[in-house]
Structure formats: C-alpha cells, structure tokens
Length: 454
Image 1 (cartoon, rainbow, N blue to C red):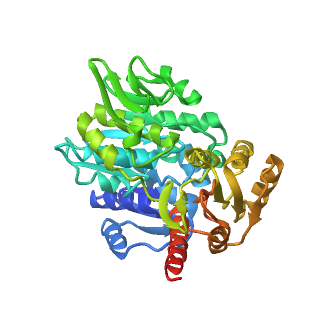
Image 2: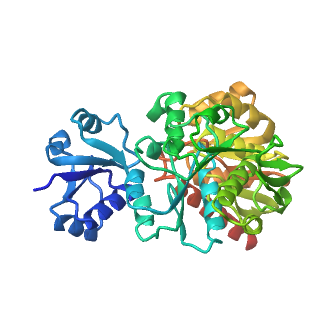
C-alpha cells in the first residue's frame, strides 16, 4: 500500500486539506490528539482510499507516512512534527497545499492586526473585476477549499497568519501586504524576531515583477524594505510619499509611476480610526496592483461598513452607543480601538485569556480615555493590578459577560460609549472571539428591547 499523507488537526483547515487530498486519490490519515466530531461524508471519502481518522498514537504512525500537512494551530515544536522532521519526512501547511492546487493570482495579507478588515475590503474590490475572485485563509473557508474550483485567471485574497506562513515552501503571493507587527503569539514563536521572520515569509518566493506593500509608519515593518525581492510599495497615513499609497489632508492618494489619483477622503468612509486608515491604504494598494479601477476602489470604500466584531456598532441605548470589538485579542488591537474614539468617555469591558503581553501602554491610554474599566476572565487580576498602577480611577470586577454588560448599562450616561475590547483571547469563557462578540451583542439587544418597552 502506498504511504499516506498525515493531516494533523481536525479543524476547518485540516478537514479541508484532508478532503482535497482524498478526492485526489491520496490515502489520508486525518490525525488529532483528542476526540473530535468529523463529518460522516469525510470519513467515507477517506476510507475509499484506505485512509481514516486517527486519534492519538503518535510517532508509530510515521512509519506509513510520506508527508505531514499541519493545520495552523499545530506548532513545528510539536513532538510528532519534530520526529517527522528528524526522519526527513516533508512537513508543510494547508496554505502550501492550496498553492499547489491553484494556478490563479494571489494577494497575501498579513500583520498582527487589521488582516480581516483589509482582506474583506480587498475581496470586495476584486469582486468588481470581470474574473472570478474569492477570499480565504483565516477568513471564510480553508484555502484548499476556496481554490478548488477557481480558474487560472482568478484572484484570491488570502488572510494569512504567522502560523500559516511559518510552514510555506513554494507559496507565492504576487501581491503581498504586511500591515504591522506588535507583540502577539509569543507563546508560539517565543521571540519577536521569530514572529517577524514568519511574517516575512509572505514575500520570500516573490519574483522581480511581484509587489510587496509595507507600512512605512511601522518601524519594524519599515526595516524589512531591503528584504523584498520584488517591487516595493510603501503605504503611509503620516507621510506624503514621493511614490506609494498615502494620505494628504484626509485624502487617500495613489502615486505610482505615471499614476497620481485621489481615491476619496476619510470623511467618505463609514469606518473610523487611524488603524482603519492604514487598512484602507493597504487595500487600495493591493487592489490597484491587481487592476481594480480607482472609481471602483472608491465605491467599495464609501459603502463598506466594516467587519463583524471589529469596532462594530451594535446599538444605542438611552443615548449611549455600544460597540463590539471582540476581535481585539491583544493589547495593541485594544489600543487602536481606544485611539479610534477621539472624545474618550468610554466604559471599557476587557479581560479574558491572558496572553501575558505588557500592559503599561494600554493602561496609560485607559487612564485618559476610559471613565470606567470593567474586567472579567482569567486576566482580570493582572489587568486590575496594571490599571491600579497606571492610576485608573474606576475599576470594576465581574464574573460574566452578562454581568459586565448589565453593569455598563446601569452606569452609562451620555456622552459615554460602551466598548467591548478585551485585549485577550476568549478561550477561558468562549469557544472563540466570534462567540464572545455574539454574546455581547445578544445581551445588548435584550437590554435595548427592554428599554424600548418602558
């Protein structure tokens, strides 16, 4: 019997990879460390080629394996992965597998924050072209599933995490975007240098005609300009660039070779904040190099209302607006959210699974922007200590999201704003940040309905 491909991880990426490989006639061992429910159709498909679901068993499986495909959540430091590497078995990721099966064009988008908003924007801009286009990666379906039926002249906007990028081999993005780099995922990468190196993989296989868009305003990302093998295009909201994508008196401007065009003004947007201006600049650049017309770029920007769970307007209750920023799973993302509310007077709900990143910068901003800080989850104690040290005056502790939102409603008055922006992962209380955001929105909706009936 032919040796198998071992797909490690039974999530969206792993199941997608296993399905594509099995459909291609490969014998697939879909492996997971613990029991996990798997679609019956997938089990049947695997069995047709002699494959199966395998729970546990570890290194002995490698005797019958010729390649290992990792889901993004599986670290290269995993003992089974390390043993595969020691034996000379090829180890790669689901993004690489998708690339093998796709002959179209790719825009790859990465960064610590802003990936989903930027990728969504780029996807909507690509949809104005006369060819097939899709988004995938960290957003939507697994990349392997997204590219399955895409023709050669299509465009894929791929949101790529450092976890996906650290295992690529030949993956090539014709247009690569790096938005920013701040402390995150250090439990996985250990150092900022290793984290940054994984991000830089997004452009490592580029050809001279390809384009990389880098954030001129981010000092770490700016330092990577000399590493780009293709054409380098900077974007900046702070500097007027001789060539690049930049802002000038609120206008978003493309200046590249013989083109100089104002796309629109930030007043035309329905999203706000400096971080979103950077996302918009990056999306403009990516779409421009993909051939999207400036007027189509402008039309998308003017109609775009943002993505769910990222400074998402939820409701206004008794004159107080509520915003869901559950996607803020690190301190830098919460800082950007706080900065977006220029007038301050926030009631901030924060806390969750602690990533143990430094809190000084965030809490200094909390002191100036936040009237009341409501803390919950595993991180509450450390966040409380940091807030006290920073001089935050009003700190409350609660045990649940419901208690947090009801407390915020009880104390909030105009001109305050209630903001959920946790600066933490969500796994202490929820299955993920989407579940946390939906919970917040459901409670706000209940409160709003009760107020209307009074």
